[in-house]
Length: 377
Image (cartoon, rainbow, N blue to C red; front, side, top):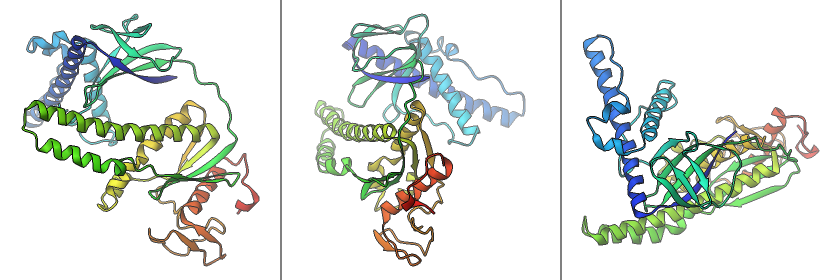
């Protein structure tokens, strides 16, 4: 099993400068390779002749000597990342690859471990062509390091993600199945097969920090471009945005891990946040919730710990169908939080009813553990 471990780096000024240059070289190679691939395609399309092979990262070094200073494996991995982007495009699972911007793209590079070039000794981690860098190892691991990805945030903070090959986690079966309904009033409403319902509050991290972010943004807009005060204001605003992101990730990681620890089968509804955010009135709240990241974390944690994740069909009417009799007596608008079934007379909380309907999918796909009589068909 391959598992990633992310740690905070504490480089010296000289090491930080080298890491920034290497990140820039990897971005430069990615953009040059993409530019040349587009040119080769246009030449072949116009001339009709055989298509020439795209260049390699090493072929650019005579033209751009500064590339020789960077880790060669970082440049090679940039090419692999572009190849993967094109593979996703041709498989129609992603759009056409775009050029990486120095300001907007994620600042990172990936290098490989070759005969111990990446290793940990005490409170330092060794990286190729730079040597040992101090880091904070807040948790240990057992296994062989395969690669390392160095990243830098907008505030100039460095991290290293070590990809480790290790034995699979020991499988410990859990007792319950759970249905999870995601929303905005509550971040999630869960109901397990013991009919225990939990309403998890929506932290609304961005909404709570919005006033402070506005003040910091206004202060930045008043500073003179290129001045030191503007750079200070930019860092202050970036730190506030990072605090919001860190709080959101902390909440999602703790919640997803607790759900995976307690339940053997997890059923979650399939949402399309990007399409839902076309509603301008709800777009900011939907983006703040982080539903997509939550489901992504559930996916890989279920895979790590031997759980089963079931994604309901996007057209599954979890909020419209009565969980008691299974009848759908008409569409209910978003403003209807409680309703009474016209067929059986059962009174429902909208979100609890949806979680019960999702729980039924767990029993249909994994009938080994039956539902209580109250949920029976």
